[in-house]
Length: 253
Image (spheres, rainbow, N blue to C red):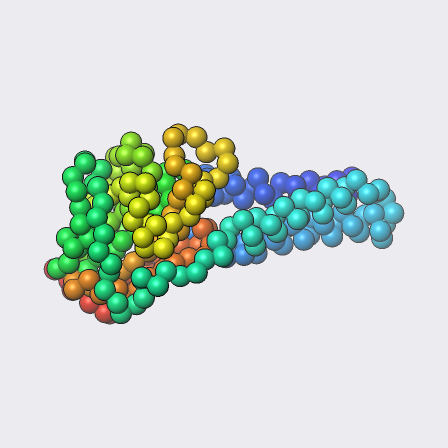
């Protein structure tokens, strides 16, 4: 009985992580998710103890526990990570590269329009990514802090127009929302992911996505910080880049 309890605990870890990400409405996690790894290790130890020390069970619960543990480890240490090489175009101290996009109302937009005020630019994967939507909601909740510093906030995704319009309306996003058609800008900037859409995602999304990226610039377009995470679950806290913008260029209205 105890062996199967341990095996069941391990088997439930990965589904629990998915529920946590989707239902938890969070914008970031710890890099290695130690609580979930602890539960995984504990479950394997219980199953192994019951088989090898107590002699109260056979191989079945132990194999279930080990197999489930392998899946958890693969998710935390492999699937969540990109093996990313930071883009050379986002070096702190350099000028933001010029690019052109389409706003969700169809109007053209040039990055040169960001000059004259500090800016926060977020490339996100799409509405299908719960961490991305959590990140957007968190930005909206903190938007007054950005307004006080005169910071322009811009969200960029290559997802279809209707999905960007949906997220814009859902959170009543007060900033700039743009669409990178065919992922062209992401490709040019070195942050595109070929076939990055997870299997099973419906809704007409393109198979190509973008590496989550957060940039902060001052009013001259100089990059003050660049978060190029290598783990899709780990995103910067708005408080951290607000502090950087305050120290290095953003001015209160």
